Image (cartoon, rainbow, N blue to C red; front, side, top):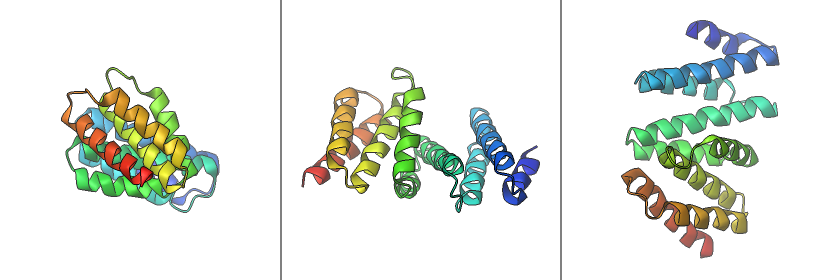
Length: 173
């Protein structure tokens, strides 16, 4: 099934077929992740990102951003923070598409059980807004993130809070 979906994503010209294949590949990557097959999940997320790189269609571009978000999230959870940072920087270049995808992802995360992911998504949104020169909305997101997660005991969340503080200082400079 995986190879068939990759073939559709790579070779098909029908937008609806490409969209379905991309969605199915993202879901398959998520399933691989649940099976502790992070390397296979990352390969699928990279394939979706690469094949949709030139997509101008807003829906396909949004799926590309979702693949990029998933990759950064997986790398961060694996402790590959430099690689995660690089993946995040690519996301930030997506501008408004990234903000929309980050908003959508944040709205689906549970504040109690998915705090690591939620803090990371919010930081990504703040940095993206800052890159788009939307200082006030970026500061609002950073301040909310710091307030919400400052006392969290997770090392990953604390690293995200530290990055949020640094981002705030940069925004205020």
